Length: 624
Picture 1: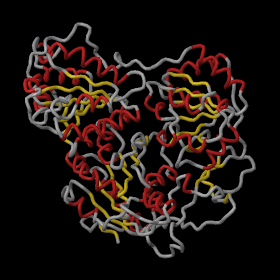
Picture 2: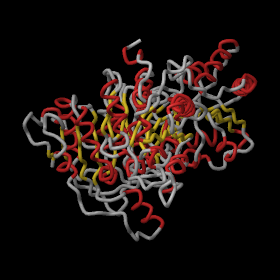
Picture 3: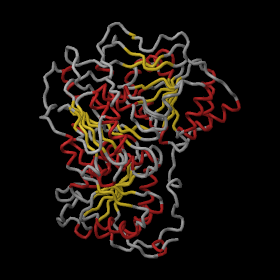
Picture 4: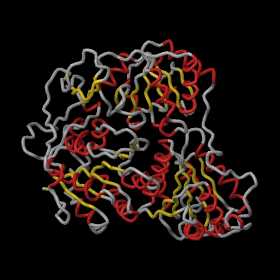
């Protein structure tokens, strides 16, 4: 027991910090202010090098950092804010955590309780025309509590954390008035949980349901597993892959579960969803008997290409089956944590072995790049698809990739091959722009190996790009790749398709992203590059990875030609597709053979043999 723990009467602020520290939380993301400064002072005094404050540039960034840390590190993310505008900003991040089922604890300072109803600065009691903080946060969290007396602390804190971690995870918020932070908290209860695991209570799939699922799989002719993000978040996520391999069952993933199954495995058959692979959609529609959805609530972005699939061919295992039951009313829906459930299925497989025959002649296919405007790209102008192909060669092994909203994100989800051991995060819950820039901080902090790569648009950079400075402050090896085309690309694509190219409120004057980034730190603290051609991009990537990969980097991609995003509603049903990778080679056509009815123009990424040697330290990082 430390000296801090030995004190019998810590303040409320001290007691919260001690609990977070002893649970191994490590980081509290936030922005300080008058009504949260007691918490930050307690972290300074009692963190003991085991709990650290991380200063975000805005509170929504702090919420995204906590959310992404929870996803990547399978823990409870913790963020904080002061009252007023700080609380309002933080609500944006909490809404994402609620929509995507991420366990986050938000500690929100409030004006002194002694001034409730008396017109305190930033009062949020809901009285006399003030904001109702409790009602606001309750609408974007699983649970909201307010501590008004020291006796409230221990039960309310325990309930908040247990609620965030249990069932379908999500955020919980605690409202704490400034004057309450200073009060005597009293000793911890004797039965206080030592670890977060003690408070987590995920749903447990029933034995009878699992035996029924196993029997269905054993008798099925062509089962397919569709893995969702709950697999990666599970306590025993490896059991799902283990079962698939031992039974030989083909695997596809949702867009937000990229990396949940090794993509170089012969059993990996691609991505399903609005930005998914046409070959994976065909496999599911024509071959899956049944389709077993594991760890996905089957939201519309995931199930859109599955329209028309008979519900009786769908089996769902998820933490919360509400949406799945509504979308596939005749299907079998099992509520449970995928990891432990598949651990039991692995045991059943050992007792009653079976192995599925793989699909014959399957080839992973995607939509080839196509320019939005007529004509050919005969010059050396950089295209987004070329940029993604170049970045793919430098993705970190055992690292992390964050993909933001927009056309660049859609193209990345469709085209990137994810290295083994590397995870991918895309915030599809609320789908807001700008999540990836602060989120990368939460992903990278605490990693002992591997790096993080962010793929985002200039619109996202303009929203949350100043969080790059947070990475500079913390000296985190994050590479931010910013696709700069002076517009909100997906909105422009929709307006061209649906509104006869009447472009409104979607374009803006050019921004020199690299010049902005250079203001965040000197060369020795932040590498900055800018490229407008494929060859220049190759040189920039080589320079960063060969000479500067120990620090943050930002690479601006100057794009002047737009491509049709590989989003299913934007692509013609008879669109040509390209073979990306073959599996189970039985009479399969050669690599690169086209499928479909119409030829499409595509330009292969340019290669520069001298890329690794073109730059020397001290040279400009502007790659024309």
